[in-house]
Image (cartoon, rainbow, N blue to C red; front, top):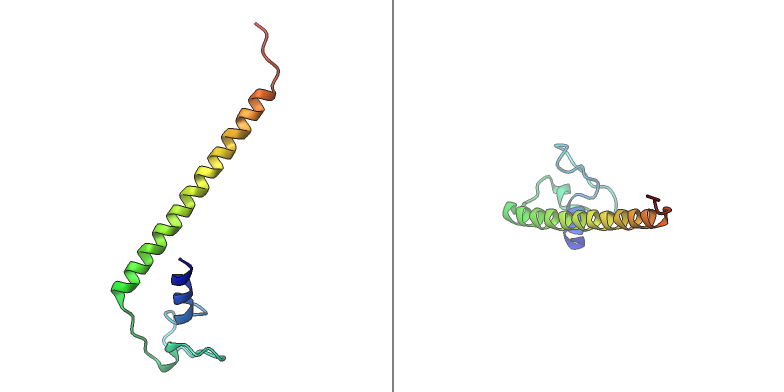
Amino acid sequence: MTTRLKEIAGIDPNSTAFRYGEYQCQGPNQSAMAGGEIYIDLFHLQRSMNALIQSLNMLCSQASRHAMRQRAQVELQNNSARAPCEI
């Protein structure tokens, strides 16, 4: 995932290349966009974006499961700390 993000950042470091018609990269790391055109393999872009989406979905899913386990553990601790009810 990190490799794909760095690849995108290398093409468009300021996230402006595809927003503005005239793009000039300033600084030592001249982008491919400085010449006015860039070739994009749309199939490669699609595969890369699908891989990124799957990775982010997996991370979100794992974070959600972790949060639910923590909430359940806190709930168990709260329930066990309460005084038993008298009948």
